Length: 546
Image (tube, rainbow, N blue to C red; front, side):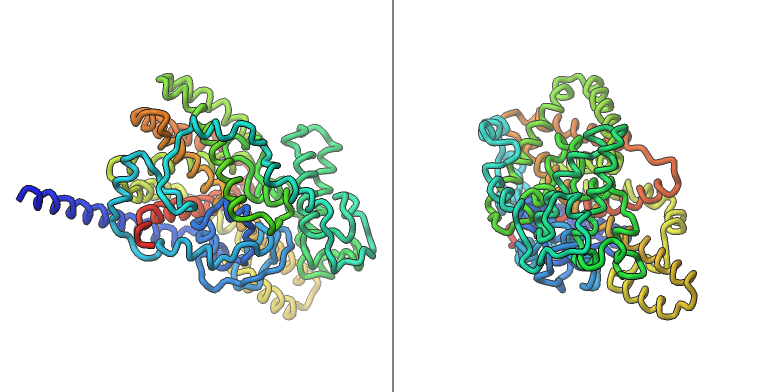
C-alpha cells in the first residue's frame, strides 16, 4: 500500500513538473513571438560550416533556421560569407559554404517540437551531477581537473587540427577568375591574387583586420587605423560576388550606387562594427574564446574539416573557458564576495571601452546570469524552464521601454520586410520615381535598412555562438565533480552575480541614434539568447522522446 502511495506521489510530482514546464515554455514562446526581431529567422541558407555547426550545435542551427523551407546549396561569398537575399527572408550566410545540411542538423533536435513531457532522467541525472550535452546526445559528467590535464600540450590555436587547412586557404584560387582585372587596389590591400578564392579573401581580411584593429594597436595609431579601414573596405567589396564582378570589370568607378543595385560597400558599414559582429574582440577572448566564424575564417571555411574535429575544437574552447571561469569565481567561492565583485567591476569597466564592448559585455553578462538562474532553479526539480521564463518576464518591461522612439528613429519604408521583399519594393519604387531627388531618397532608405538588417543577422549568429559556448562552459563549471555540491551551488550564485556586474557595467551611448541602434542589437541578441537556452532546456527535458 505504501509502495502504491509512493508511486502515485511520484507520478503526481512528474505531472506537476510537466505542467510547470509546459506553462513556462508557452509563456516564453508567446514572449519571443512578440519580441523576436523582424527579418531574422525567416530563412537560412545551408551555408553553415562544420566549425560553426560545432560551435552553435544542432540547437543553435535550429534557432537560426527555424523554418523548414530552406534554400539549399547556396553559393559562397558576400559580406556574410553567403548570399544576400532570395530565400524570402534574411539569409545568414556568415558561416560560409554548405558543409553541413541544415535539414539533417534540425532533425537532430526534432525532439524539441514534440511537446514537453516530464522524463525521469531529466530529474535524476542533474542530481547525480550530470548535464545534458545536446551535441553528444547524452548525459555527461565533467571533472575540470581532468580537463586541465587533457589540455596540457594541446596548442592554444588548435593548429594540430587546423594547421594544414589554414595553409591551404592561403593559396586557394577561384577557377572562374582569369586574374585580368581593371583595378588591383583592393587585392593589393588584402595581399591576395586577383584569382583568389573567397576563402582566401576572408582569411586575409580576418588576419589583417585583427592585426590593425584599434583595440589591439591603440586608438591613437593613425597609420594602423587607416589600414584597418582600407582592409575592411576591400573585404566588403571582394567578399560580395556581385560587387567583385563589377569591380574586376570597371574598377572603383563601377561601384557607385547608380551602377550596381547592391552597394553595401559604398553605403559604408562601420569597419569596427563589421569586425566586432563577425569576429568579436580579442579582449573578450577569456570569456567567449575564439568565435566560430573567426575559426572558420582561419581555415577559409574549408569543408574538409570533419564534424568530429570541428566538435573537438569547440569542446577545447569550452573547456578552456570553463577552467578560466572557475578560477575567476574562486575568490567569491572562498567567501570574499565583495573582493570578487570589485575585481569583476574593474574588468568590466575595461571591457566596456573596447569597440562595441558594451554590446558584447551586455550579451555575455546576460548569458551568465540566465544560465546561472536556470541552474539554480533546476538543482532540485530538474527543470529549468520556469526560471528561464521568469527571467525573461522580468526583462520584458525593460525591453519595451522606448519602443516608439526607436521605431521613429530607425524605421524606413522598407522596415519589417524580408530582404527579398525589400529588393522588390525598392525596384518598384525606383521605377515610379520621376526625379533624381526621389531616386536618391529611395536609395538612401534602402541602403539604411539593408545595412541594419545585415548587421542584425550577423549579430544574431554571433549571439547564438556566444550563448551556446558560454552555456556549455557554465555546465562544466556547475557540474564539476572535482568539487562538492555546495561549491557547485556557490559557483552558480557567483556566475549569476558576475552576470549582474557585467550587465550593470554595459553603458548606453549618450548619442540618440547610437543608443537606439544599441537597443536594436540588444533586442536581437536577447531574443537569440533566450531562444537558444530555451531550446537547450527542451532538448534535455525531451531527450528520451527523440
